[in-house]
Length: 114
Image (cartoon, rainbow, N blue to C red; front, side, top):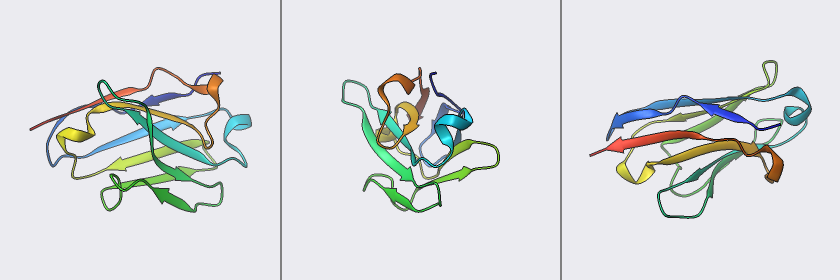
């Protein structure tokens, strides 16, 4: 099963986007989840993670601008991104934390124009 992220798009610097990821219950329940991204020409990186109970942790690049959340009743993961910068341009993915190799989906493209 591949996890499909949605909600990406093209925004101007300073704008906001909200990403979503609906997951099968078997993948979601009782597991930490995370958002990752792959900027152009770079390796995929972890940007935010959240335990099943809601404890969050962010990469330095995301602190203060991004908010990860989850709705355990809907098996859905979210990433609210504010104050977007051109360096946030990337394909964004959702997965478990630690990631499960077979769960990687196509991701959703976020492009931030200056």
